[in-house]
Each structure stands twice: as C-alpha cells, then as structure tokens.
Figure (tube, protein in one colour):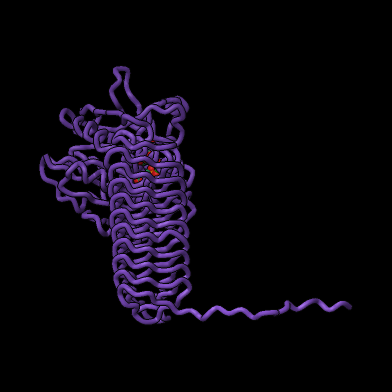
Length: 457
Ligand code: UD1
Ligand code: CA
C-alpha cells in the first residue's frame, strides 16, 4: 500500500533563542530534521513532504541533499493547516496512507512507526500516544468508558478533569489519506489558540462512526520534542547513550560509555577499544584491535587493524595503515595517508602527505605537501617549508632517507633514497641519493673570551 509522509517543520522555535531555525539545530552531529527525514526514508514511502515556513529558504537549502518535497506554509495557522498545506501537493492514490511526523521530534524509531501504521489495517486513523507522569502542555486523549478514543483536547482548551488525564497525544498519527483530506477540510479555528488543530480530526473520525486505533512508543525518548536548549541537551545525551550501546553490542570496549560522543557514523571491526573523552565525527572506520586513547578527536578517518591513537591526538580526513602508532599530541590534517607501521609522535603536524611504510616522525615536526618513502627517519624539529607566501610546494623524500634534527626542507625539494641530511640544515636544493648533505656554518671556539661583567657603581 502506498505511503506518503508529511513532516511538520514550519515552527519558529522561539525558545531556542537562536537565529538558526529550530529544526536545523544539531543532535549527534546532524540537523534535527535530518534525523526525522532519514527515519521516514527507512519506511520506504512513495514520497516525503516537508512543511517549512519560519526561516524561509534556510531549511530547504541546508538539507537540499535529501530527496524530499518542500512545501512552504507561509503563515503558521496550526498543525491542521500545516498538514492541509502538504495535502495540496500529495496527489494521493485511492488506498494511500499518510503518516504525520515532526521535524523537532528527532528520535522516533521506524519500528514504532511501523507498529502505528499497522493500526490502519482495521481503522482509518491511528494515534501514537504516551502516558506521562507530568502531561502538562500536551493534548490529552479523551476515551469513553469502553476505552475507545473520543477526541483530543488541547491543554489550553481542557477542563480541570481533562487536565488530569495522563495519556497524551504525541502528535504523530497515521491516517487513510482520503479520509484525512475530508476531515481536514472540515477543521475550524474556534479554540483557545485560534488555530486549525490537526487533533480535531479525531472527533470528526469518531463522528463518522470510526474506531480510532492507538499505539505506544517503546521508549519515552522517541516521542520527546525539542523546544529549548535544555531539551536539546537531554536528547543529545540520550542519543549518545543509544549510540554507545550500539557500539558495545558490536563488541567495542568503552572505558566509559558516557564519555564518548559520536557525531556521525562509525563502522567497527572486532576488539576496538576506546578510552574516555573521545569524539568521533563524520564517517569513521575503525579496524580490528584499534585503540583510541583519551581525549582524541577523529573526523572522517579510516584506521586499519591494530592502529593505536595515543592521548590528545586530532585526526581529520586521513587513512592510517595497519599497526601505525600516532600521538600522544599528534595532529593529522586532511588528505594524509600513513602506510603500515608508520609512527607519528608528539607535537607532530602532518598535512596532505603520504608517509611510507615503517617511517618515523617522532617529535616536534611539520610535514606538509610531502611524499615520504619507506623506512624514513625524520628527526625532531624537522620542518617542510611548503609555503612561499603565495604557493604551496612539494617535498619528496626517498626510501631509507635520514633527516637530521632541526632541518628545514625548503620546497620544492627532493631528498634522494638513502640520503642523510645533517642536523640543523636548511636544504634549498635537491639532496642526492645515498650521500650526506648538510648546510651548516662551521663551529668555532674563541679562546680566552670573557663574558662581560656588570660594572660596580
Ligand atoms: C501539538 C498537538 C498536541 C500534542 C503536541 C505534542 C495540535 C493542535 N496539538 O501541540 O496535541 O500533545 O503537539 O508535542 O496539533 N507546526 C507547523 N505549522 C503550524 C503549526 C505547527 O509546522 O502552523 C509544527 C511546529 O513546528 C511543531 C509542530 O508542528 O513542530 C507542533 O506544533 P506546536 O504548535 O508546537 O503544537 P503543540 O501546541 O505543541
Ligand atoms: Ca510543541
């Protein structure tokens, strides 16, 4: 049966106190609305329509990568009006079902939505409800003595008795499309807020003699919305817990599941181990036996088996071969590739470079725009001077070369295979293979030289 999904995202989100439209605020590294769109996609609908309004084109522009239809609701006249606005572009087939989701309820799971949609096998309307200890603010589900749903009453329109009802409307509902269209056409805004309430369709369905189905979310956090930064932070923590649990189920050892943050997608092999305060962003792939030490930030990295990232290292857009050891205090910048068994030590920065098998850059160096061969040893304090103020130039270092400490390699420059560069050299032209090259002023001693002394006043 065909399914269309409508996501409401036109609200301003005043309580976020931000110039960014609410649904673009990030949770686990992704816009709130993006979470909802991806969950909707998991249900394989015929189409997804997102109703936007506040913030104008900012929202569709920010999420233009998603294959959804954007419909503007210029004035926010209520949830009923918002769904009705979407209906105009749906061109429903006769048996089509419609599911209504919210751009600011990011953690709803597709399993829960599938359950809800099953309710439509027997009736034209199904609601996702929840029982809350504190239901204030929500619409309440009013049932008859047999427990059948009669209507939803909004907090602001509810009597004292109705306000004591603990079962609330999550807002998420599913309906037979054509019936929904019929009910929406009959909504009015004769209520405390002067809005066209989507929730009024329930009483209209009941008046037509239909039963209204209801189901519950498995977890309370699935139905929680984000209205302010406090709720955003609460859901962030909740989602981080979910992501950490998923990793542990895949066999990852986490020193503390509460001190890992995943802002993107992580793929793991067996026996990965992650110490505290690690942030993983973008798409990270962690091979077998990878160890990540405390306080590391990794963004879009691919680490092969056995890689060790020691404490306080930052790696971005790089590929690290099996058995490499990086850090502590290393910074690997984009477009860097380390081959098997390479070592990068403390206070080393590498950018846009390829480091060959087994090569070592262990202390206090900058290597940029370089190609470094195999088994090369780069001494402490080596700098590739890759930038002349206008252009970047490449440094090429052959296999088995040895670069003495405190060397500057002024690019473009090439050091041949097996070459040795004497410590403290400034290398401005190519150094031949197999030879010792150095540029250093000769050491001298001045015999009998005396330090100046302070004159006695
Ligand atoms: C709504 C429900 C209430 C439910 C609650 C759950 C109605 C009338 N009430 O109340 O029963 O308990 O959600 O959170 O539906 N929106 C638009 N366009 C509009 C109005 C709203 O896109 O014209 C979007 C908002 O951006 C928001 C969502 O719809 O994401 C809900 O709107 P809101 O006004 O917050 O509804 P509530 O008063 O919370
Ligand atoms: Ca709300």
